[in-house]
Image (cartoon, rainbow, N blue to C red):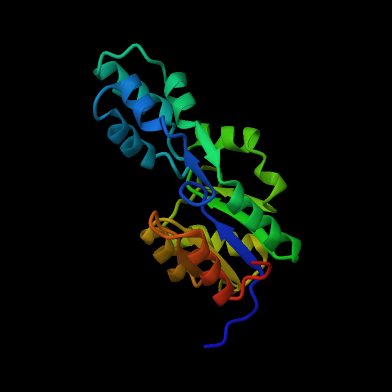
Length: 202
C-alpha cells in the first residue's frame, strides 16, 4: 500500500521523549507510604482529560494514610523528569526538513503546566498537545483526530510514536501510522522503523 508523504511526526512524552528520575518511585513511596504510587497513578487517570482536579484525590490519599507530606511535595516528585537528549536531537533533525513535530502526551494539569514552563520543548516541537488542555486523552481516537485536524493534515500523513500498545492502537484506529517504542526496543530499531515509514531527516 502506498502512503502519502509524512507531514508530521508526533511523539509521546513519558517513555519516549522523557523519563522520570531514577529516584522517582522511591520518592513517591517515601511521601505516601507503601503502595501510594499505584493509588496515585490510578487517581491521576481520571484527571488526564482535564475534567477533574488531581489535588483533592491526592490530598485524600495522604490523609487516609496519615502522611504529613503535602500535595505540593507529591507534584514536585512527579515533576522530576529527565528529557532524552538523543530523542530531542532526532526531533530536531526531522523538524529541520520542514516536517511538523508535535508532542502528544497524556498529562494532568499540574505536571503538564510544569512541563510547559520548565522543559523548553517549544524549542523542539512546533506544537504540544497535552491531554488536559485538549479535553481528550489517549487512547481515545478522538484525541488523535483533534491533533490532525488542528494541524490541517490527513491522518495517514502523520506518524505517531508511543511506548504503550493501547495508545498506538488508538492512533491507528484514527487512521494515523503508529509505532510502538517499548522499554526493550532500541533507539536504532526506532530509527529504522521511522525511516521505513518515510519520516524524513532520520
